[in-house]
Image (cartoon, rainbow over all chains, first blue to last red; front, side, top):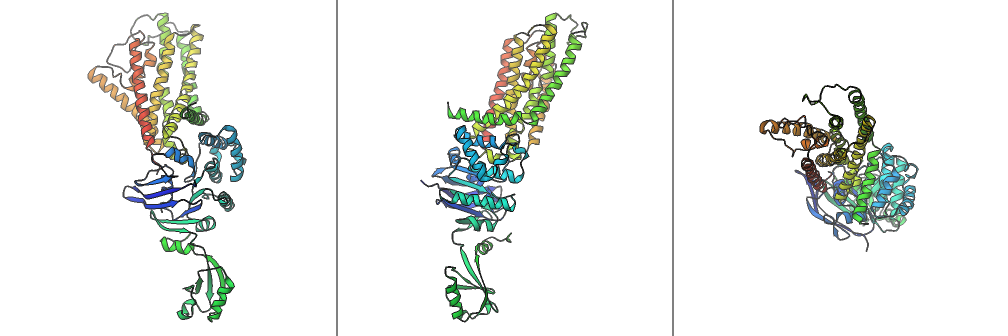
Length: 297
Length: 280
Protein backbone atom coordinates (compact mmCIF):
# COMPACT_ATOMS: atom_id res chain seq x y z
CA UNK A 1 0.00 0.00 0.00
CA UNK A 2 1.49 3.39 -0.92
CA UNK A 3 2.02 5.81 1.96
CA UNK A 4 -0.62 8.43 2.62
CA UNK A 5 -1.26 11.43 4.81
CA UNK A 6 -4.68 12.96 5.21
CA UNK A 7 -5.18 16.24 7.03
CA UNK A 8 -8.74 17.13 7.88
CA UNK A 9 -9.96 20.52 9.08
CA UNK A 10 -6.77 21.12 11.00
CA UNK A 11 -6.62 24.24 13.15
CA UNK A 12 -4.03 25.35 15.66
CA UNK A 13 -4.42 28.44 17.77
CA UNK A 14 -2.16 30.13 20.30
CA UNK A 15 -4.52 32.21 22.37
CA UNK A 16 -6.15 34.51 19.86
CA UNK A 17 -3.58 33.87 17.15
CA UNK A 18 -4.57 31.31 14.54
CA UNK A 19 -1.36 29.64 13.36
CA UNK A 20 -3.02 27.00 11.18
CA UNK A 21 -6.54 27.61 9.91
CA UNK A 22 -8.81 24.79 8.77
CA UNK A 23 -6.24 23.02 6.60
CA UNK A 24 -7.38 20.11 4.46
CA UNK A 25 -4.78 18.18 2.48
CA UNK A 26 -4.44 14.72 1.07
CA UNK A 27 -1.01 13.40 0.25
CA UNK A 28 -1.55 10.03 -1.36
CA UNK A 29 0.84 10.07 -4.28
CA UNK A 30 4.55 9.46 -3.77
CA UNK A 31 6.67 12.41 -4.81
CA UNK A 32 7.99 15.70 -3.50
CA UNK A 33 5.34 17.99 -2.06
CA UNK A 34 6.56 21.42 -1.12
CA UNK A 35 4.80 23.77 1.24
CA UNK A 36 5.75 27.24 0.17
CA UNK A 37 5.00 30.32 2.17
CA UNK A 38 6.46 33.33 3.92
CA UNK A 39 7.69 33.25 7.52
CA UNK A 40 4.73 32.89 9.84
CA UNK A 41 2.56 31.24 7.20
CA UNK A 42 2.03 28.17 9.40
CA UNK A 43 4.34 25.74 7.57
CA UNK A 44 6.43 24.75 10.58
CA UNK A 45 3.42 24.61 12.91
CA UNK A 46 1.69 22.25 10.48
CA UNK A 47 4.78 20.03 10.39
CA UNK A 48 5.10 20.08 14.16
CA UNK A 49 1.52 18.84 14.46
CA UNK A 50 2.14 16.16 11.84
CA UNK A 51 5.13 14.89 13.83
CA UNK A 52 3.50 15.03 17.27
CA UNK A 53 5.72 17.83 18.55
CA UNK A 54 2.68 20.04 18.84
CA UNK A 55 -1.02 19.23 19.05
CA UNK A 56 -3.88 20.46 16.94
CA UNK A 57 -6.57 22.60 18.52
CA UNK A 58 -9.09 20.86 16.27
CA UNK A 59 -9.11 18.59 13.26
CA UNK A 60 -7.26 15.39 12.62
CA UNK A 61 -4.38 13.81 10.74
CA UNK A 62 -4.34 10.26 9.43
CA UNK A 63 -1.06 8.68 8.44
CA UNK A 64 -1.43 5.46 6.48
CA UNK A 65 -5.08 5.62 7.66
CA UNK A 66 -4.05 5.77 11.35
CA UNK A 67 -5.05 8.83 13.40
CA UNK A 68 -1.83 10.26 14.83
CA UNK A 69 -3.35 11.26 18.16
CA UNK A 70 -4.05 7.63 19.08
CA UNK A 71 -1.08 6.02 17.34
CA UNK A 72 1.69 8.58 17.59
CA UNK A 73 4.60 6.21 18.24
CA UNK A 74 3.48 3.87 15.46
CA UNK A 75 2.91 6.72 13.02
CA UNK A 76 6.34 8.18 13.79
CA UNK A 77 7.75 4.80 12.83
CA UNK A 78 6.67 5.48 9.24
CA UNK A 79 8.28 8.89 9.23
CA UNK A 80 11.66 10.50 9.02
CA UNK A 81 11.59 14.07 10.21
CA UNK A 82 13.70 17.17 10.29
CA UNK A 83 11.78 19.95 11.97
CA UNK A 84 13.31 23.38 12.53
CA UNK A 85 17.08 23.69 12.75
CA UNK A 86 18.29 20.41 14.21
CA UNK A 87 20.24 20.26 17.46
CA UNK A 88 21.77 17.19 19.08
CA UNK A 89 23.13 16.22 22.47
CA UNK A 90 26.53 17.90 22.54
CA UNK A 91 28.50 15.11 24.19
CA UNK A 92 27.44 12.40 21.75
CA UNK A 93 29.13 11.62 18.48
CA UNK A 94 27.20 11.73 15.20
CA UNK A 95 27.73 7.99 14.81
CA UNK A 96 26.26 7.32 18.27
CA UNK A 97 23.24 9.50 17.53
CA UNK A 98 22.51 7.67 14.28
CA UNK A 99 23.11 4.26 15.90
CA UNK A 100 20.61 5.16 18.61
CA UNK A 101 18.00 6.17 16.03
CA UNK A 102 18.49 2.93 14.11
CA UNK A 103 18.41 0.77 17.24
CA UNK A 104 15.33 2.46 18.68
CA UNK A 105 13.63 1.80 15.35
CA UNK A 106 14.39 -1.89 15.63
CA UNK A 107 17.51 -2.32 13.49
CA UNK A 108 20.34 -4.59 14.61
CA UNK A 109 23.67 -2.95 15.39
CA UNK A 110 25.26 -4.55 12.35
CA UNK A 111 22.50 -3.40 10.00
CA UNK A 112 22.62 0.05 11.61
CA UNK A 113 26.35 0.44 10.94
CA UNK A 114 25.96 -0.56 7.29
CA UNK A 115 23.05 1.83 6.84
CA UNK A 116 24.85 4.70 8.64
CA UNK A 117 27.81 4.28 6.30
CA UNK A 118 25.49 4.57 3.28
CA UNK A 119 23.50 7.50 4.57
CA UNK A 120 26.64 9.27 5.81
CA UNK A 121 28.02 9.17 2.30
CA UNK A 122 24.71 10.23 0.76
CA UNK A 123 24.29 13.25 3.04
CA UNK A 124 27.98 14.12 3.19
CA UNK A 125 28.38 13.80 6.94
CA UNK A 126 30.45 10.61 7.15
CA UNK A 127 33.70 12.56 7.56
CA UNK A 128 32.72 13.94 10.96
CA UNK A 129 30.47 11.24 12.43
CA UNK A 130 33.24 10.27 14.85
CA UNK A 131 33.22 13.75 16.40
CA UNK A 132 30.95 15.02 19.17
CA UNK A 133 27.92 16.94 17.89
CA UNK A 134 28.61 19.85 20.24
CA UNK A 135 31.41 20.95 17.92
CA UNK A 136 29.41 20.82 14.69
CA UNK A 137 28.74 23.89 12.55
CA UNK A 138 25.21 24.80 11.47
CA UNK A 139 25.68 23.10 8.09
CA UNK A 140 27.12 19.96 9.68
CA UNK A 141 24.14 19.73 12.04
CA UNK A 142 21.79 20.20 9.11
CA UNK A 143 23.39 17.30 7.24
CA UNK A 144 23.37 15.12 10.36
CA UNK A 145 19.70 16.06 10.84
CA UNK A 146 18.96 14.96 7.30
CA UNK A 147 20.88 11.73 7.86
CA UNK A 148 18.87 11.15 11.05
CA UNK A 149 15.65 11.64 9.09
CA UNK A 150 16.65 9.22 6.34
CA UNK A 151 18.75 6.59 8.09
CA UNK A 152 15.87 4.15 8.65
CA UNK A 153 14.59 4.50 5.07
CA UNK A 154 11.16 5.92 5.99
CA UNK A 155 8.24 5.97 3.58
CA UNK A 156 7.15 9.45 4.64
CA UNK A 157 9.80 12.14 4.96
CA UNK A 158 8.99 15.49 6.54
CA UNK A 159 11.64 18.15 6.16
CA UNK A 160 11.24 21.68 7.45
CA UNK A 161 13.46 23.98 5.41
CA UNK A 162 16.11 21.30 4.82
CA UNK A 163 18.53 23.65 3.08
CA UNK A 164 18.39 26.27 5.81
CA UNK A 165 21.82 27.45 6.91
CA UNK A 166 23.67 25.74 4.08
CA UNK A 167 25.98 27.41 1.61
CA UNK A 168 24.97 27.33 -2.10
CA UNK A 169 26.93 24.15 -2.71
CA UNK A 170 25.30 22.50 0.31
CA UNK A 171 21.85 23.59 -0.90
CA UNK A 172 22.59 22.14 -4.31
CA UNK A 173 23.72 18.84 -2.80
CA UNK A 174 20.67 18.53 -0.54
CA UNK A 175 18.33 19.17 -3.47
CA UNK A 176 20.14 16.48 -5.42
CA UNK A 177 19.69 14.08 -2.52
CA UNK A 178 15.98 14.82 -2.48
CA UNK A 179 15.75 14.29 -6.24
CA UNK A 180 17.61 11.00 -5.85
CA UNK A 181 15.23 9.90 -3.07
CA UNK A 182 12.32 10.80 -5.32
CA UNK A 183 13.68 8.99 -8.34
CA UNK A 184 11.77 5.78 -7.70
CA UNK A 185 8.61 7.64 -6.61
CA UNK A 186 8.09 5.40 -3.56
CA UNK A 187 8.05 7.97 -0.79
CA UNK A 188 6.05 10.98 0.15
CA UNK A 189 8.57 13.75 0.73
CA UNK A 190 6.93 16.75 2.30
CA UNK A 191 9.18 19.74 2.68
CA UNK A 192 8.70 23.35 3.53
CA UNK A 193 10.59 26.28 2.16
CA UNK A 194 10.22 29.97 1.55
CA UNK A 195 12.49 29.73 -1.48
CA UNK A 196 10.45 29.75 -4.66
CA UNK A 197 13.39 28.56 -6.74
CA UNK A 198 13.79 25.54 -4.51
CA UNK A 199 10.10 24.66 -4.73
CA UNK A 200 10.14 25.13 -8.47
CA UNK A 201 13.19 22.95 -8.98
CA UNK A 202 12.30 19.82 -7.07
CA UNK A 203 8.55 19.64 -6.47
CA UNK A 204 5.91 17.45 -7.98
CA UNK A 205 3.30 19.41 -6.11
CA UNK A 206 3.40 22.85 -4.51
CA UNK A 207 1.12 23.98 -1.71
CA UNK A 208 1.16 27.68 -0.91
CA UNK A 209 0.31 28.67 2.65
CA UNK A 210 -0.37 32.14 3.93
CA UNK A 211 -1.66 33.28 7.33
CA UNK A 212 -2.21 29.68 8.39
CA UNK A 213 -4.32 28.68 5.42
CA UNK A 214 -3.67 26.73 2.25
CA UNK A 215 -4.23 29.30 -0.46
CA UNK A 216 -3.13 27.28 -3.46
CA UNK A 217 -2.57 23.59 -4.08
CA UNK A 218 -0.93 22.88 -7.42
CA UNK A 219 -0.08 19.54 -8.94
CA UNK A 220 2.23 20.42 -11.82
CA UNK A 221 -0.01 23.37 -12.71
CA UNK A 222 2.65 25.98 -12.45
CA UNK A 223 4.56 24.64 -15.40
CA UNK A 224 6.57 26.64 -17.85
CA UNK A 225 5.19 29.39 -20.02
CA UNK A 226 6.61 31.34 -22.91
CA UNK A 227 7.09 35.04 -22.45
CA UNK A 228 7.42 37.04 -25.68
CA UNK A 229 8.39 40.73 -25.59
CA UNK A 230 6.38 42.77 -28.08
CA UNK A 231 8.05 45.71 -29.77
CA UNK A 232 6.19 48.78 -28.60
CA UNK A 233 4.56 46.89 -25.70
CA UNK A 234 1.88 44.24 -25.73
CA UNK A 235 -0.70 46.47 -24.09
CA UNK A 236 -0.74 48.67 -27.19
CA UNK A 237 -1.86 45.75 -29.33
CA UNK A 238 -5.39 45.60 -30.58
CA UNK A 239 -6.95 42.66 -28.65
CA UNK A 240 -8.55 41.39 -31.84
CA UNK A 241 -5.15 40.57 -33.37
CA UNK A 242 -3.96 38.49 -30.42
CA UNK A 243 -4.34 34.81 -31.32
CA UNK A 244 -6.12 32.37 -29.01
CA UNK A 245 -3.93 30.78 -26.30
CA UNK A 246 -2.12 34.03 -25.55
CA UNK A 247 -2.63 36.60 -22.82
CA UNK A 248 -1.22 40.07 -22.42
CA UNK A 249 1.00 41.07 -19.55
CA UNK A 250 2.39 44.60 -19.78
CA UNK A 251 5.08 44.56 -22.51
CA UNK A 252 4.82 40.80 -23.03
CA UNK A 253 2.34 38.42 -24.41
CA UNK A 254 2.39 35.06 -22.77
CA UNK A 255 1.84 31.69 -24.36
CA UNK A 256 0.23 29.13 -22.07
CA UNK A 257 2.16 26.42 -23.88
CA UNK A 258 5.84 25.81 -24.62
CA UNK A 259 5.36 22.61 -26.53
CA UNK A 260 6.18 23.85 -30.01
CA UNK A 261 7.94 27.20 -29.86
CA UNK A 262 8.46 27.71 -33.64
CA UNK A 263 4.74 27.11 -34.26
CA UNK A 264 3.80 29.53 -31.51
CA UNK A 265 6.05 32.24 -32.90
CA UNK A 266 4.77 31.63 -36.44
CA UNK A 267 1.21 32.24 -35.23
CA UNK A 268 2.30 35.62 -33.85
CA UNK A 269 4.13 36.53 -37.03
CA UNK A 270 1.10 35.50 -39.06
CA UNK A 271 -0.96 37.89 -36.93
CA UNK A 272 1.51 40.69 -37.79
CA UNK A 273 2.84 40.98 -34.26
CA UNK A 274 6.52 41.96 -33.97
CA UNK A 275 8.65 40.81 -31.08
CA UNK A 276 12.30 41.03 -30.07
CA UNK A 277 12.74 38.56 -27.19
CA UNK A 278 11.41 35.11 -26.32
CA UNK A 279 11.97 33.50 -22.94
CA UNK A 280 10.64 30.51 -21.11
CA UNK A 281 9.62 31.09 -17.53
CA UNK A 282 7.81 29.40 -14.69
CA UNK A 283 4.76 31.16 -13.37
CA UNK A 284 5.16 29.97 -9.76
CA UNK A 285 6.43 33.40 -8.70
CA UNK A 286 3.39 34.98 -10.26
CA UNK A 287 1.03 32.55 -8.56
CA UNK A 288 2.86 32.97 -5.27
CA UNK A 289 2.65 36.74 -5.40
CA UNK A 290 -0.99 36.59 -6.35
CA UNK A 291 -1.76 34.46 -3.29
CA UNK A 292 0.70 35.78 -0.75
CA UNK A 293 0.75 39.42 0.05
CA UNK A 294 4.51 39.79 0.48
CA UNK A 295 7.48 40.56 -1.69
CA UNK A 296 9.38 37.66 -3.18
CA UNK A 297 12.78 36.92 -1.67
CA UNK B 1 13.30 -9.49 26.00
CA UNK B 2 10.32 -7.19 26.34
CA UNK B 3 10.51 -4.57 23.56
CA UNK B 4 9.43 -1.76 25.90
CA UNK B 5 12.18 -2.56 28.42
CA UNK B 6 14.70 -2.94 25.63
CA UNK B 7 13.88 0.52 24.27
CA UNK B 8 13.95 2.01 27.78
CA UNK B 9 17.41 0.48 28.09
CA UNK B 10 18.47 2.02 24.79
CA UNK B 11 17.18 5.43 25.86
CA UNK B 12 18.88 5.02 29.23
CA UNK B 13 22.29 4.18 27.72
CA UNK B 14 21.96 7.03 25.20
CA UNK B 15 21.32 9.63 27.90
CA UNK B 16 23.69 8.05 30.40
CA UNK B 17 26.51 8.43 27.89
CA UNK B 18 25.61 12.08 27.36
CA UNK B 19 25.41 12.68 31.12
CA UNK B 20 28.71 11.13 32.13
CA UNK B 21 30.55 12.98 29.40
CA UNK B 22 28.99 16.31 30.38
CA UNK B 23 30.63 19.18 32.20
CA UNK B 24 27.93 18.88 34.88
CA UNK B 25 29.16 15.40 35.75
CA UNK B 26 32.75 16.52 36.19
CA UNK B 27 31.74 19.65 38.07
CA UNK B 28 29.63 17.56 40.43
CA UNK B 29 32.53 15.13 40.83
CA UNK B 30 34.81 18.05 41.66
CA UNK B 31 32.36 19.24 44.33
CA UNK B 32 32.30 15.76 45.86
CA UNK B 33 36.10 15.54 45.83
CA UNK B 34 36.25 18.95 47.50
CA UNK B 35 33.76 17.95 50.20
CA UNK B 36 35.53 14.62 50.75
CA UNK B 37 38.88 16.44 51.01
CA UNK B 38 37.53 18.87 53.60
CA UNK B 39 35.96 16.08 55.60
CA UNK B 40 39.17 14.02 55.36
CA UNK B 41 41.04 16.99 56.81
CA UNK B 42 38.46 17.24 59.60
CA UNK B 43 38.61 13.50 60.21
CA UNK B 44 42.33 13.38 60.69
CA UNK B 45 42.44 16.60 62.73
CA UNK B 46 39.41 16.00 64.87
CA UNK B 47 38.89 12.31 65.23
CA UNK B 48 42.44 10.99 65.02
CA UNK B 49 44.52 13.25 67.23
CA UNK B 50 42.36 15.41 69.42
CA UNK B 51 40.98 13.26 72.21
CA UNK B 52 39.50 16.04 74.36
CA UNK B 53 37.30 17.63 71.86
CA UNK B 54 34.38 19.90 72.49
CA UNK B 55 31.41 17.68 72.47
CA UNK B 56 29.52 18.41 69.29
CA UNK B 57 26.16 17.67 70.83
CA UNK B 58 26.91 19.90 73.85
CA UNK B 59 25.32 17.38 76.17
CA UNK B 60 28.30 17.34 78.54
CA UNK B 61 28.51 13.57 78.56
CA UNK B 62 31.62 11.57 77.86
CA UNK B 63 31.68 10.19 74.35
CA UNK B 64 32.38 6.49 74.16
CA UNK B 65 34.41 4.86 71.41
CA UNK B 66 31.39 3.53 69.53
CA UNK B 67 29.58 6.83 69.85
CA UNK B 68 32.67 8.58 68.57
CA UNK B 69 32.58 6.37 65.48
CA UNK B 70 28.89 7.11 65.03
CA UNK B 71 29.70 10.80 65.43
CA UNK B 72 32.29 10.46 62.67
CA UNK B 73 29.76 8.89 60.31
CA UNK B 74 27.05 11.33 61.38
CA UNK B 75 29.20 14.37 60.62
CA UNK B 76 30.23 13.04 57.24
CA UNK B 77 26.65 12.27 56.33
CA UNK B 78 25.35 15.53 57.71
CA UNK B 79 27.82 17.39 55.47
CA UNK B 80 26.97 15.22 52.47
CA UNK B 81 23.22 15.43 52.93
CA UNK B 82 22.84 18.20 50.34
CA UNK B 83 24.84 16.42 47.67
CA UNK B 84 21.78 14.59 46.24
CA UNK B 85 20.04 17.97 46.00
CA UNK B 86 22.90 19.38 43.96
CA UNK B 87 23.06 16.24 41.83
CA UNK B 88 19.32 16.55 41.25
CA UNK B 89 19.70 20.17 40.25
CA UNK B 90 22.65 19.40 37.96
CA UNK B 91 21.15 16.39 36.21
CA UNK B 92 17.41 16.66 36.76
CA UNK B 93 16.57 20.35 36.54
CA UNK B 94 17.60 20.79 32.91
CA UNK B 95 16.46 17.29 31.89
CA UNK B 96 13.34 18.32 30.01
CA UNK B 97 13.64 22.11 29.85
CA UNK B 98 16.96 21.79 28.02
CA UNK B 99 15.25 19.67 25.37
CA UNK B 100 13.13 22.71 24.59
CA UNK B 101 15.76 25.39 25.19
CA UNK B 102 18.48 23.70 23.15
CA UNK B 103 15.94 22.42 20.61
CA UNK B 104 16.91 18.75 20.86
CA UNK B 105 13.19 18.08 21.43
CA UNK B 106 12.55 18.46 17.69
CA UNK B 107 14.70 15.41 17.18
CA UNK B 108 13.82 13.49 20.37
CA UNK B 109 10.04 13.94 20.34
CA UNK B 110 9.79 12.53 16.82
CA UNK B 111 11.34 9.19 17.76
CA UNK B 112 8.80 6.36 17.46
CA UNK B 113 8.74 5.59 21.17
CA UNK B 114 6.14 6.50 23.78
CA UNK B 115 7.08 9.63 25.68
CA UNK B 116 6.96 7.59 28.89
CA UNK B 117 9.85 5.48 27.61
CA UNK B 118 11.89 8.61 26.87
CA UNK B 119 11.07 10.07 30.28
CA UNK B 120 11.83 6.86 32.17
CA UNK B 121 15.07 6.25 30.29
CA UNK B 122 16.33 9.75 30.92
CA UNK B 123 15.21 9.62 34.56
CA UNK B 124 17.12 6.38 35.13
CA UNK B 125 20.20 7.85 33.46
CA UNK B 126 20.08 10.96 35.68
CA UNK B 127 19.57 8.81 38.76
CA UNK B 128 22.45 6.52 37.79
CA UNK B 129 24.99 9.32 37.33
CA UNK B 130 23.81 10.85 40.62
CA UNK B 131 24.24 7.49 42.36
CA UNK B 132 27.75 7.19 40.93
CA UNK B 133 28.63 10.66 42.23
CA UNK B 134 27.18 9.84 45.65
CA UNK B 135 29.08 6.57 45.68
CA UNK B 136 32.34 8.49 45.38
CA UNK B 137 31.36 10.36 48.54
CA UNK B 138 30.51 7.15 50.37
CA UNK B 139 33.75 5.57 49.16
CA UNK B 140 35.68 8.53 50.61
CA UNK B 141 33.80 8.16 53.86
CA UNK B 142 34.47 4.43 53.99
CA UNK B 143 38.18 4.79 53.28
CA UNK B 144 38.56 7.41 56.01
CA UNK B 145 36.65 5.28 58.45
CA UNK B 146 38.73 2.18 57.77
CA UNK B 147 41.97 4.16 57.99
CA UNK B 148 40.95 5.76 61.29
CA UNK B 149 39.31 2.86 63.05
CA UNK B 150 40.80 -0.15 61.25
CA UNK B 151 37.40 -1.75 60.89
CA UNK B 152 34.39 -1.68 58.62
CA UNK B 153 31.35 0.37 59.65
CA UNK B 154 28.21 -1.43 60.77
CA UNK B 155 24.95 -2.00 58.98
CA UNK B 156 24.05 1.66 59.57
CA UNK B 157 26.47 2.58 56.82
CA UNK B 158 24.47 0.54 54.31
CA UNK B 159 21.21 1.94 55.69
CA UNK B 160 22.57 5.44 55.21
CA UNK B 161 23.71 4.64 51.67
CA UNK B 162 20.31 3.15 50.84
CA UNK B 163 18.49 6.13 52.35
CA UNK B 164 20.67 8.48 50.33
CA UNK B 165 19.72 6.60 47.14
CA UNK B 166 16.04 6.97 47.97
CA UNK B 167 16.60 10.64 48.67
CA UNK B 168 18.38 11.04 45.32
CA UNK B 169 15.49 9.20 43.65
CA UNK B 170 12.95 11.56 45.22
CA UNK B 171 14.85 14.75 44.54
CA UNK B 172 15.54 13.79 40.91
CA UNK B 173 11.87 12.94 40.40
CA UNK B 174 11.00 16.40 41.75
CA UNK B 175 13.56 18.13 39.55
CA UNK B 176 12.24 16.23 36.52
CA UNK B 177 8.71 17.35 37.33
CA UNK B 178 9.84 20.96 37.68
CA UNK B 179 11.79 20.63 34.45
CA UNK B 180 8.72 19.48 32.51
CA UNK B 181 6.90 22.64 33.51
CA UNK B 182 9.51 25.08 32.21
CA UNK B 183 11.01 25.70 28.81
CA UNK B 184 14.10 27.43 30.17
CA UNK B 185 16.82 25.79 32.25
CA UNK B 186 17.38 28.80 34.48
CA UNK B 187 13.79 28.76 35.72
CA UNK B 188 14.04 25.04 36.44
CA UNK B 189 17.31 25.45 38.39
CA UNK B 190 16.06 28.37 40.44
CA UNK B 191 12.68 26.80 41.15
CA UNK B 192 14.23 23.65 42.60
CA UNK B 193 16.57 25.64 44.82
CA UNK B 194 13.75 27.86 46.04
CA UNK B 195 11.49 24.87 46.59
CA UNK B 196 14.01 22.90 48.58
CA UNK B 197 16.08 25.46 50.43
CA UNK B 198 13.44 28.08 51.04
CA UNK B 199 9.94 26.67 50.93
CA UNK B 200 10.55 23.23 52.48
CA UNK B 201 12.97 24.61 55.08
CA UNK B 202 10.59 27.39 56.04
CA UNK B 203 7.66 25.00 56.17
CA UNK B 204 9.50 22.62 58.52
CA UNK B 205 10.56 25.53 60.74
CA UNK B 206 7.04 26.90 60.94
CA UNK B 207 5.48 23.52 61.68
CA UNK B 208 8.13 22.68 64.26
CA UNK B 209 7.79 25.97 66.12
CA UNK B 210 4.02 26.38 65.92
CA UNK B 211 2.91 22.82 66.52
CA UNK B 212 5.92 21.23 68.23
CA UNK B 213 5.91 18.19 65.98
CA UNK B 214 8.48 16.83 63.56
CA UNK B 215 7.10 17.20 60.01
CA UNK B 216 8.54 13.88 58.84
CA UNK B 217 6.36 14.09 55.74
CA UNK B 218 8.47 16.94 54.38
CA UNK B 219 11.26 15.72 52.13
CA UNK B 220 13.99 17.78 53.76
CA UNK B 221 13.10 16.24 57.14
CA UNK B 222 12.72 12.71 55.78
CA UNK B 223 16.08 13.00 54.04
CA UNK B 224 17.78 13.52 57.41
CA UNK B 225 17.43 9.79 57.99
CA UNK B 226 20.69 9.22 56.12
CA UNK B 227 22.58 10.69 59.13
CA UNK B 228 20.00 9.90 61.79
CA UNK B 229 20.70 6.20 61.23
CA UNK B 230 23.90 6.92 63.23
CA UNK B 231 22.61 9.39 65.81
CA UNK B 232 18.95 10.26 65.94
CA UNK B 233 19.46 13.98 66.00
CA UNK B 234 18.38 16.58 63.48
CA UNK B 235 19.91 20.00 64.23
CA UNK B 236 17.02 21.68 62.38
CA UNK B 237 14.32 19.94 64.38
CA UNK B 238 13.41 22.05 67.41
CA UNK B 239 10.45 19.95 68.42
CA UNK B 240 12.23 16.97 69.95
CA UNK B 241 15.17 16.40 72.28
CA UNK B 242 18.32 15.05 70.65
CA UNK B 243 19.05 11.39 71.14
CA UNK B 244 22.45 9.73 70.96
CA UNK B 245 20.99 6.43 69.82
CA UNK B 246 20.56 5.49 66.17
CA UNK B 247 17.14 6.07 64.67
CA UNK B 248 14.88 3.06 65.26
CA UNK B 249 13.97 0.83 62.34
CA UNK B 250 10.36 2.06 62.37
CA UNK B 251 11.58 5.62 61.88
CA UNK B 252 13.92 4.55 59.08
CA UNK B 253 11.07 2.76 57.31
CA UNK B 254 8.71 5.71 57.76
CA UNK B 255 11.20 8.25 56.44
CA UNK B 256 12.18 6.04 53.51
CA UNK B 257 8.49 5.51 52.67
CA UNK B 258 8.01 9.29 52.64
CA UNK B 259 10.85 9.59 50.14
CA UNK B 260 9.41 6.75 48.04
CA UNK B 261 6.03 8.49 47.99
CA UNK B 262 7.68 11.72 46.84
CA UNK B 263 9.64 9.82 44.19
CA UNK B 264 6.69 7.87 42.78
CA UNK B 265 4.13 10.67 42.87
CA UNK B 266 6.37 13.33 41.32
CA UNK B 267 7.75 10.86 38.76
CA UNK B 268 4.22 10.02 37.60
CA UNK B 269 3.16 13.67 37.62
CA UNK B 270 6.24 14.61 35.59
CA UNK B 271 5.63 11.77 33.13
CA UNK B 272 2.04 12.97 32.69
CA UNK B 273 3.11 16.56 32.03
CA UNK B 274 5.81 15.32 29.64
CA UNK B 275 3.28 13.14 27.81
CA UNK B 276 1.27 16.26 27.04
CA UNK B 277 4.22 18.58 26.50
CA UNK B 278 4.20 20.58 23.29
CA UNK B 279 6.98 22.51 21.66
CA UNK B 280 5.52 25.52 19.94
